[in-house]
Length: 247
Image (cartoon, one colour):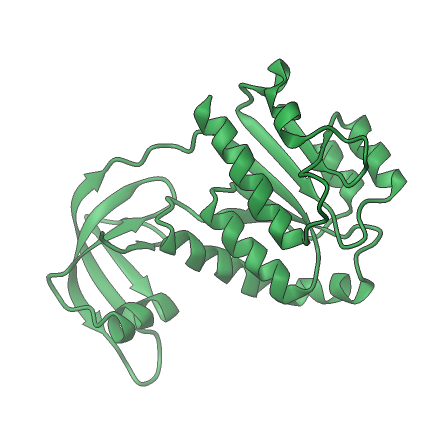
């Protein structure tokens, strides 16, 4: 299966890869003129042939392509937004990678009440790194485009701004219905938009649960076991994605 890379734009039946991606393609994958790869600008997909590999000791590396054939690029079956509370950054970044592989469209980091304050303070400096993680994960999983990454906001603001459609909030409360039960309810079954909110270590506060309810989020449980945030991301997204695709 051919590797896929993202480019800024297609122009005059050609395209250019620059910087770290070009360096990886040329030095790690040992790309040569004549080889074929897939290129995406986020909306269209092309089969492209390498014309020239330019590696320099200093300055910007470049790989020049000529476009061969436009490929089918089906749109995602659903728009999935992940509201993800900040946790320790190694685990948060693992969750970003897996959420990308599972098809999330948009990721909004949350500064929940029980989020460690030093994480919130340091998040802004990590934004560029997180965008790179999403970019690389999307290429690896052959997506048409990486998910968008918003700035860190408070949960109440994120809840209020969520798209209409399926709105789920993972909950540890004993009376929360199972995710399976919530997804089987008729109003939820054909939603083109889905928003999934996952809380921090220690769970949501009562005020956050109330603000989610006011924004028409349905509480849902993944079972009796308490999962780490990053585990809940993978488990819930796999179930939600399967449910949306199966419909």
